[in-house]
Image (cartoon, rainbow, N blue to C red; front, side, top):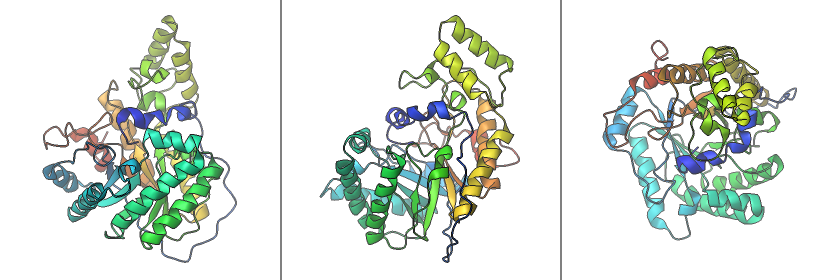
Length: 375
């Protein structure tokens, strides 16, 4: 996600109808083995939007970061708005360098995530060359910063949720990799499939021709559960509530929700629930998708991670939220897939405020970090 809660999730609207179904295309028969050692895949992570993806961003307090580290979080994914890296803006670049260095000092690995604004998303969709040039220039600036930071503890994520057809994205991905490599020859590159970084989209996306890379996907399936009661657009998800996890189409709360929506004349929302529950919402269904992702990783000999997953906390019951989060996290770990939760303290968050160590959601943190007590 990233940007603000509203603008981040707008890019996911086109994927909603796909989120309830089976997700990976047929895999190729084999992949060439890589001679070089694979990079270390970061894990036990948390996304930290609202710092360098907006002009008035707020840094978390050091006591909050220290507590996160003490609890067992190891990685911070740090969305960065390329539009803030305008030519000559050395102040922003110095702030990013200092912020990442502080995170490293506290023991975190950092994913420097080029997280485009809605303006850049629009530019990439409407004028590919102009939009591509903007991203490349942002990486020229940010690459100079990362070059001063640890290549073992700082990762370069090329572009979050690239809003492009696959062929255009592969072209831009190669260009951005070359730009970053010109500045940072030893940093690990991270990339995801277009346009939503959905787990179902990676099957047709080959890796870079680079020995030091990680493929990254996002997981929010089923969106009728993870995004119920969203508030930022006219999606039918805004009108869905009270859905549990796990669930089947016969679950009483599901039937009650569908009946209420149909009684109100909301066929669109009722049908979305039915569509996404064509496959029951279970731990086993989640595990099956991550087994397919592991097959992709093994086929291409390319490490993978899940650098976004989460459940909006607006109207979901706490037990269902914890159950889903724990099931997804365990499915990733069982298949050697790193993870970073979306996000710290906004709509999907696990703490009340980045400025205070009070208000940590202990049960959600257990679901993420403690296999015996979470969920």
